[in-house]
Length: 265
Image (tube, rainbow, N blue to C red; front, side, top):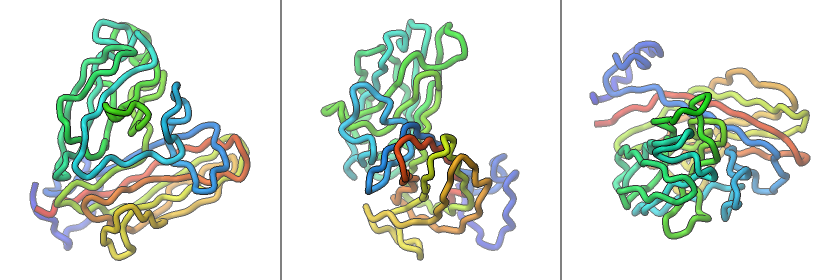
């Protein structure tokens, strides 16, 4: 990766094609159904669909800085290496140093399978990478990734009938800076809610771990916002996340955000 040239023109297609040294397009998407009216808000993900329920499905827990060992498990016996559902899943994560790593796991249905690395600091991407003979190339059951020592601490999930984790939370890798440029949201059940994209960094782009400040906000009720432009600098090891506050029970929200991840090395 090359260093970032602040005077270079912004060219989304060139970045997507990998033609701009040191830059890549970085996006996330997520959804949540059957939202409650939790005073502190509810992180946008499908954690409330899991059985058994996680220790927290309203706020996704954050692993320790030193990382830890995690395991993957499905709610269906068909998500196994010889099954008709998800046979393999891939996890793109940050290690204890904050560097990007990738590992792939053979599924074993409802029996948890531990990841080989023991220093997973944050799960950035989680998706099915090999499927069985089932229709639609999707997971047969909800698949979750959790702390090996405590299955209640769930960090991400692939929903039943899908193949990609709809969890719009990311941690910026070490020696990188993220420029958050745009986002959008939708509410589909005629239940008013506010969606807020947040990061644990100051407006000037300085990390302040665990204190998530708002970067964008939108009130929605059975409508979509369309693309909203943003302009936020998010530093290395800070987390970008989206949280919703529903006015009444039953709101249903989806979100998307994008920007440019820049290597500083």
